[in-house]
Length: 254
Length: 254
DNA sequence: AAGTGGTCTAGACCACGTC
DNA sequence: ACGTGGTCTAGACCACTTT
Image 1: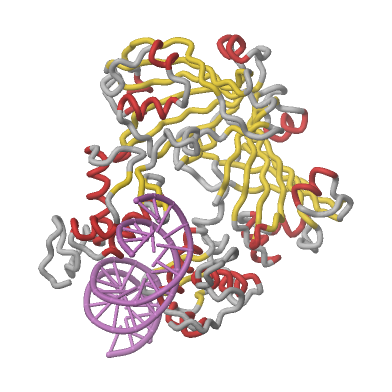
Image 2: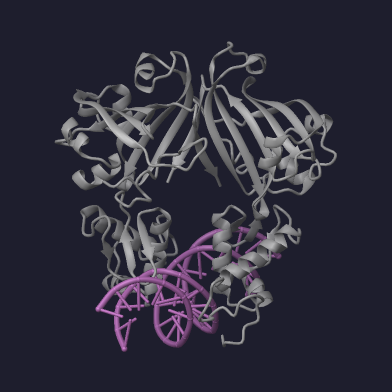
């Protein structure tokens, strides 16, 4: 390839390059953009590496490197011989991707989400800060319990910007018998990319006692999660308590 | 490259290949082997990609892919213009690599490890299982406290196979004013590659009350960790309690 | 047989660090 | 100026899936 560049921004070999970014990252950004505007939907195949190479006017190897990174980010999934797919929360293996709770003994079974209630409110200071919106912005608050084999183990309170989740209500939640994120993806076109959890130990309060059937004061795991979609935009804040009598939170450190 | 293969195991293109592994993975295994034997020590440079390519009789690109994976595994560290280094726990950024505890407010400061006592014992059922040794095998048990800005926040009990940690005692621990893993690496040639933590919420017992200066019954984070060196060999088991009044456990989910 | 991703190679040039 | 890793390309062939 000669020096006359074609891709936007930076002639990529400029000698003084404060904002230098390699070609494959520019391609990655372009693919990401196409995903954001919904050019390819979760679960679908994207064009082959060769097609994308032609489209973006780069070599197949460069497209490959861009896709490599996106596969590492859990945004795309490669399937040899078939093609590259947009990752989806409807995929059984991705469904409870962010849930780290494992039963003390016995195999891990998928939990069941039981919605308790769901109402409109205005964002307080903390919710506003974590969701990167202004205090007072309309939000939806959802309470639910997560059951493992009929037993309530997790009690969550979930805060969602109403602008994104228009139409979400208790009825819709009760009609859905899969993971929340698969509902969010299917009904609101939202794909969760990453999340951040802050974990503490707390004593069970009244609510927890009622929902999790534990004694008041029982030590519980307090898990606060902010979940991000494309572009690192926060779209969910949840705070929950986990009963860790028969389960534990498993974390792989690498 | 022609069909006459040179590397051990499998002629890599065999049509019936139940144990097929690509060339770059074989190279990765060979480099790993050299690291285990101590051919290059933590913190040192390894030979350049070109040199390794000649040594293993493959192209530079293949060595590169092997090193790419090992860099992703935190085993090697690339430094543009300088070379590729063996990751070391003596590196300030790697020092508390597995510690996920973050202060509620204020910047994260490095903790200080304060050894309490250290004695010989024989492995019980649980220690034996987690360390993959036989019950009764000699082990070393170490108790210590982790202090953040003078305040005791973590109380740990650490179980180590004596065979590997011969000579470890309280004196050595007290003389060391850096992370445990950097001591393990420096004195016992052990590099920790990955770890697994199981987290629960528990009530503070007598020991915790004394060590962490909290009320009896205070909810604490119980963190159990098994740490692995090369070849997924477990070499450390630790169980600790974290006081989460002014700190939280931060976990990135990807 | 054709199409997709996966591996391997060889060569060119760039960016960074050191001498 | 030189050596290192980092990027980009082009082409060959393998492995897997579908037609």
